[in-house]
Image 1 (cartoon, one colour):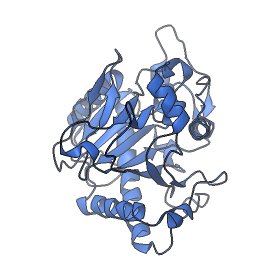
Image 2 (image 1 turned 45 degrees about the vertical axis):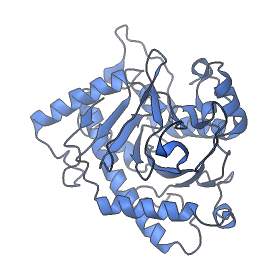
Image 3 (image 1 turned 120 degrees about the vertical axis):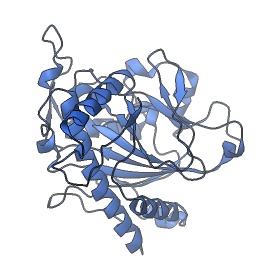
Length: 340
């Protein structure tokens, strides 16, 4: 999808940070990438490097804690965030049945869960009194400060990206702003342990699509490779970064695909075990920021995305209904039956 340059600006949500001509150029590139692959790499994003490093370090420190401390802040039926242990998530189950296929590897992934652990936090929009209260591990003041700063910067970046989305869809630049006043975006840190002898066909993260508007993914550390996305023909291509590259990888989620009447694609992706080289068995870490709009937002076909015959593929649904359905299907390990 190419690089998205000039997205960051000075951090003011009233500006994308580039002139009108450049905005239109970026919007056209964004639209093309979202139609073809659903993945974009952005640079010049405006998030300070130290903010990223602090969040990254504290995530590593959290995963290095004793398992009892991590389980003390575990996800529960009344708190869909927190810690998830190895094998607790079945990402392949989040795919619709018609996308899921019958591959043995995918069936195995749904049955056994993915070999990774996660920590999730939702802080919510500034000033939102109804935002969930995060549950942090004990003695985590530095982590709380680092993650809160990262959350605020990524929320601001997401708002600017949504303005790019609006221009790319032929909408007023601020069209999505009203959908982010009480957003429920989530930071998710993911730890993939070193695995000297992975079983044949074992994936680090099984094939899946993301659920929300889009995901802002930070890769790095000793082993940034392994992420692959699926082409339209079913083949896989690697998402490659240069060593130390200061960028984010953006991929669209199911909600945005639905919202745009499938004009834009939510591309299946996975994380594979590397089979050669020094990174073959390395520990791997990533930090995802899931951009989730207001839970009571009505998601109906965007006016500029109605097809040539005036058709809309999906009935309206609230963002909360959509996300919770996907979440619980993933936890239960049962493929979603439909997208309605």
